[in-house]
Length: 476
Image 1 (cartoon, rainbow, N blue to C red):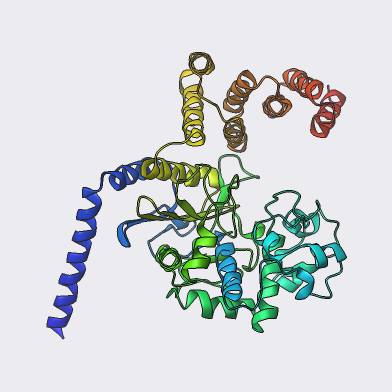
Image 2: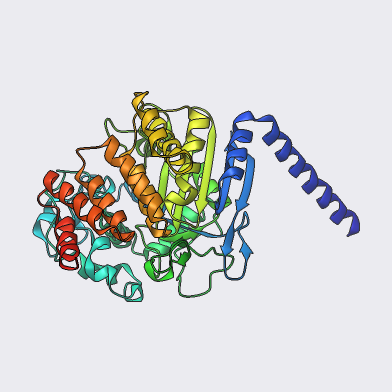
């Protein structure tokens, strides 16, 4: 027994040494590791593999801040919309077996669906690619303002969308909607004659040997699971638990929990044609012209990059699995804070390091540099840098950082960032609206009124500015 134990320890030590040695010898992975270590407040876990060999696996931050429990490489994280990958694979398994086709309308499987246009004109293909025109139950007032305990099953969600008007005509626009994948889950149940969870467990998770993944009930104990945290809406510069903002249970649209290694097993099984045959694996992983979303698969805005996978984001959740096919890398990234609290930084730096930069990545990191410069060296310095370059600035990036400063109670810093946004985007009504809000939060009523007026001049239908102006002027 002692000899066996000693042998196991030696083998374990050898495997760790080999992994560390390989990691140190891989300059790209070493650069990523150093960057992740430098991210202040980063909380989550990262796995990087090359040619089906794990080179790097590390956890950061806390799974439970109250008890000071650290994340580890086996922690279960919420993966949000990554669950759409599993649903899409299940749909293509049914297509592969000849039980359904991409062109089948919803009405073939749900003949009682109350909306005739949906029954007759929305196909499985349109659901997979988010082109159905179906309403967004996830953004409905009833869903947002009702206890999530009322929506434990897919059937519980049906009243939120079945009788609501469509947002657009089928195949008119791409609109990312959870509703599409809820309906795909219902179709899987009809065709397979088994509950969605059972089908996924037997035909996806079991095939990929994923033993720690599932749509768990979040109001019941989940072993070794991370809590989600966001910047507080109540107390400035504090973190808030996202328990009441999240779904009570995952569905075919996402919301389940998984680990680094389980998602790595899924990515590996998928790319090696172990979940679908080569034909349908290729259908899923092949980028469609001018689209960043295919059939349950996301592609970065980098044409012919060979990168595919799926991300997920929600309050206190940032998650992604990605295959860099041309370079031979697979990356799993799981975090338990909001997307802008480390997830996006990690995601984009990893992509840039492995596959090279793109205009979008250049804009992201240039904007990040400008924000840092504004806060540390002053607005005039950042304005001068912008004047001396033709690099693109992300308005979304500036706006998000400004609102982060507001949530942190750092109103003067928010004002500086929104001033930079106005400088770069002088025709943006939203930039002036945001600057007005920062001034209002800082107690500068006159400046707030002036900027809300500028916003209205650019967009007379800006109802937020109208309401804020009315309140500010009444309280002068």
